[in-house]
Length: 570
Image (cartoon, rainbow, N blue to C red; front, side, top):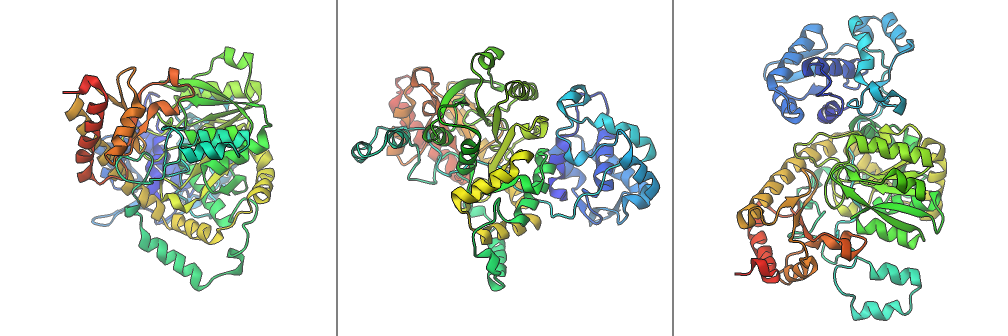
């Protein structure tokens, strides 16, 4: 584990309501990371100020823990240089015999594969390991954890597939579309009629588009040129089933530490993004006519994948805790697949609660359903704490985890990934090679090294701070103009906010008026399965808009709102 992802790893394992002091939990977790070599010798740990800010705890607490670790010999501190993991192995600290006995003890725990420690041993039968299970070892000064494999730490997250996010069919079809529809199959015509791809891929206020101007192009170019100078022939052929081995190793390491995903490198399938990952899962795990449950509202892109695959989508409404099916829903007609975005529901932005995650997993286990987990926007959080992925909580092997680099790096990279259940990993790898004949091994090699050297982690941290700042500028602009009349929602994560419009408002008309003023927003109603049941609102993206342009652009958007909605007209 690189020190740069340490705060995410700690945040998922510190139990604030457990009754155990945060100081003691932090001390034990840092010991654990050092003894297991998750934090390797010589690694620089974050400053007390930075770690305290990212964990939301007092700086004095972190300082005291660091001082205690110095006294115990786990870390060293040098004024002006920082705090570093000591050049001492776990065997040297507690003795090889003691470590060996701990590793083979009946109750020994491998925390590297444990999901979120916030879900304590009270749910042990759900396969979730609590930090309490490690307490029995603390009196000896160490936890019996096998060392990590010598694989570079990764930093890669799963995000939405396409840059130009838009609702299904926000505007009327063109004459060309109507003409083409007569020559297309029923399936093709349905796809085109519901298409939401935008011709515009940036500017105010395109949702879901990252600021590619901040991408570290020099570093990427250096790595790219390095591979071209000593180009290996094996990087110019088709990709092996599953993708480049190095990238799969890097991703497995990252997902384990940052998202509590439990997988081997062989379970990871490299794809071109969310769309292809979902398409692959649908092809292998369902047949035409099967039912798939989707969130309502949901991302239009994956809805299109379902339609052309011959599935029967059944929208399930979301509430403040995420998708909310009832036991009666499952009993009446259990689906073959369930597609969810638990980390940051798209488009509304709520985070699926831990209780709802457990309920969904248990229902899926009882009714033998597959869950496709799109871990959308899990890295762009502005104050909230991450929850473990559904895959990390799953004990029945029924979750397919998908993600991509489209939002974290740049949309044109077209690299994503899927984590298949272990018994199906070989089938998924074979099917991927058979269906898609993947390539781009050079890009995969550059990406793997970019992640392994820590550049991805650094980029995420910088962009998280930048996007959080832009989000606040936008919220301030909304509040100044409309106060509480048009509330903004979407949680404290992601790359867009949803501005709610009064009930009965025509959000599509507002979007058209905004487009006439060179402002791109997305009508919320287009993401719902039925227009009659849809809420009215606007998706406003802020990530790709410079700070100084946000307020003027919102004033232009406000003109479109005021002209279109009578209640705001002067």
